Structures are given as C-alpha cells and as structure tokens.
Image 1 (cartoon, rainbow, N blue to C red):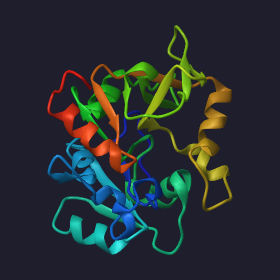
Image 2 (cartoon, rainbow, N blue to C red; image 1 turned 30 degrees about the horizontal axis):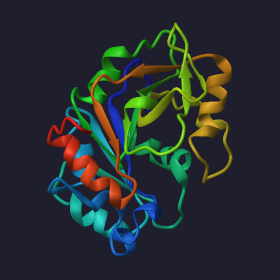
Image 3 (cartoon, rainbow, N blue to C red; image 1 turned 45 degrees about the horizontal axis):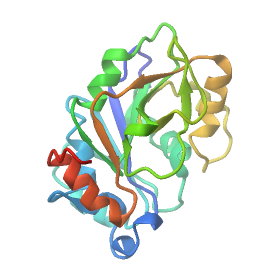
Image 4 (cartoon, one colour; image 1 turned 90 degrees about the vertical axis):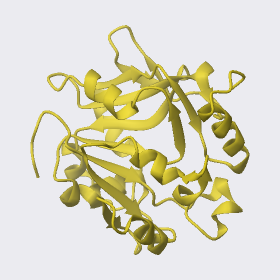
Length: 230
C-alpha cells in the first residue's frame, strides 16, 4: 500500500441494504435510485475526478457491476457478507492502494463546490488523521434528527449536535490493522482518532441534501435545480 501524505484513491460506499429507501430498493440498490435523471451513484462519481475510484457492492451487487461496466472504476465485491462501512473500507484497502484515502457515501447530492476538492484543500497531513466534511445542522437539507459532531475553534471534532457528517472524509487507515472483526462501523476507527485529538472537520459552504428516503428525492431535485425555498 502506498504511504503518502495525500490521498490518491476514493472508496464510494454502495453496499448497504437501503432499507430507508424502500420500496424503491425492493428491486435495486439505493445507489441506483434516480435523482434528477441519473442514479445517486453517478452523482457521487461526478465528484471523484482524478482519483482512483473503488465502489463497494453487496445488495444487488450484480446491478452495481453492470452499471459500472466500461467505466474507469473498480468494484470491491462484498456479496458474501455485509461488512458495514469500516469493514468495507478494510476489505477494499488492497484495491485502494493509498493511505490516507477518501471515502464517500452515495446517498446525498451536492450543489456548489466539489466536496472532494474542499477536503483536498483543507487537508493538513502533519496534524490530521481524519478530516470530515461537515454540514451545519441548520443547513442540512432532508436530514432528520440531531447532528453528529461539534467543531472547536481549531477545527477539532467531538461528539455533538451542531454539525451533520456529510458522508465525505479523508482518513488514515493504519488503525484498521488492530481491528480483528470483519464487519464493523466507521466508529471503530473514528473513536481512536477522536481520543488522539487528530480528527478534524471542515465546513462545506454549498448545499447538501440527504437522499436516504423516497420523500427526499423531490427535495433533492429542487435543491439541484436552484429552488430558493430549499
């Protein structure tokens, strides 16, 4: 695996069961649900220019393979077992061949600056083990519930309610070697980084919409169309 100060690869999470998006996910994976005329997965892929791109797949994995055929991407196949986000990242490490790496959820859309580029510009490898792109709770379109983190004056993250995690991060993967499980959430890696004080947040200046449920699709489409009421 390449040990570098800057990530050269990105993992797009496309393996989940998409239960919140039912019944649309009864016959397809959530990343292939259309928003504004193209699948959520393609919205995410549009943000990844220049990076080696890996997409993981479990639920209706064959549809992900078919959709990506001929594209400049690699599939990390998890058909045998649902691995969650942390386990999916661990499985994909040989394909990513980068440390640190980007990861990105595929159940949101963006309007404004490229979120991946925003993190590239804010990444400070000399002091960060993780950098998460955050949305102020008041500006999180389509998101129900409280936030995930707070950010202090120096950019350190702590658990809290002020900001919603957007689903995009840069993260060093060294800590994965100490996790013996195969299926686990990203928190298994995050908790140690939080304890070290090397987990940071950058605030996104554009618009972001969670597209986790069917009723969020028209909201996301209105945001992408520039509706001032969103």
